[in-house]
Image 1 (cartoon, rainbow, N blue to C red):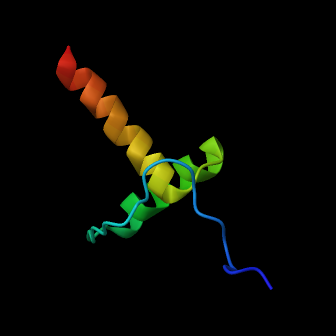
Image 2 (tube, rainbow, N blue to C red):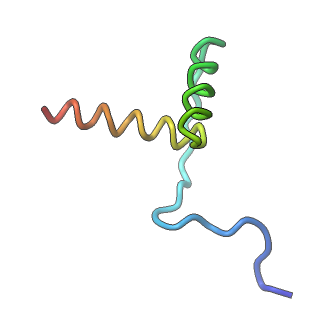
Length: 59
C-alpha cells in the first residue's frame, strides 16, 4: 500500500489559507459562469481576476 492516498498535491505553493466572503446569488452565478467558460475552478477564476487587478494597479 502506498504511504499516501487521495488526491495528489498541486505543484507550486500550497493553498493553505481560507477566506470566507458573502455573495449575492447574482455574484455567485457570475463566478460560476466565468469558471465554466474558462474551464477553471472558482478559486482559479477568482485568482485570475485578482491578477488582472494587480496589473491594472501597476499602470
